[in-house]
Length: 433
Image: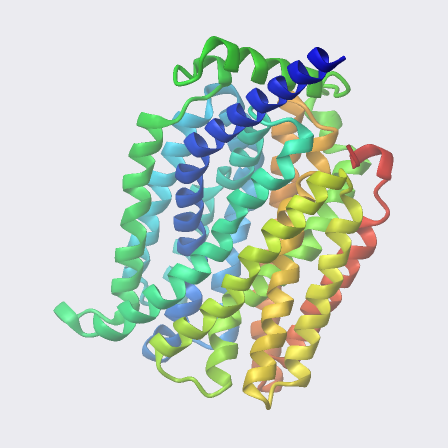
């Protein structure tokens, strides 16, 4: 008995060491890519602090331009992810990053509402497939019971973009404003877009598509990882794409994700504006204050994901942070006249929102496989991200109509509550493993 126990312990130690090795090899690059990707997606929120006055844009024009990104994203998401599944992540993710980096830098040339709309739409087309492609890619390496923490680690890139991007964007806009005749927001788009191009080249050179291609693993390590993935796939069915598109489970997941992403982008695109309304006028001050909610969110994401993987429970680990996020958003309006309490409430709200997102992806990836997974993940992400069009446009319109972001923030809180209730309607037997 002692020998068997010792052998089992040794096997577990080897497995844990192997997954640590994989994480250290894959995650730093993927995380940096996502930080740059998300920063290029939402830095328009900081550009708003200068470009609206300089270009004469209303909040409605800004909200439509910020959100129209997701229309291009929507139409090209599913085909992009299917192509990735066919040709491999290395080439396709690299291609995505290079094209979106160039287009993000080109945002500096926006002069009219129409050019603003066109460039944001094209940026969405270019980036389509990046996030669901990485989620799909991680299913090639990690079984379901390890996926919560690893997706949470990847998605800390959102918070990382807030921690790094807020001060960076504020500093560029403050200190580069007027240099070479360009405004600070123009320099911000240029300097924050070019790193994506460089990272795209790095991805093409360094990433491996599958476990079998990873020469940095020993034969024993590759065999272990492949066996774990094959065991994880046993209960899944690689269904045709059209069946995936018609699946009630997939559409339920899309509705849940829509609700949570509404909260995410409603806050992300307007957080600088909300902070400015609290009395912080300097772009650098706004950037530094924005670090607080994003920094706390990183901790919340990792703690909740670790708990979910340890207990192998998913639904409540998604729903409860969603409700906490809704409460935090609502309280940020209630305490809007008290700066410290308002920032604390926003921090709670954003932390709840961020903690839901990585664990949400443990729901659809629990029952999707193969090409069906590529199509299903992309469909859920594209439909869910349509709220990235709806929420900033609605918040902008409500701000123009009421003179305040309060009503829009309440709307986002209601969306989070709906998402939490829908999450609890997912059968536990389907996802808790």
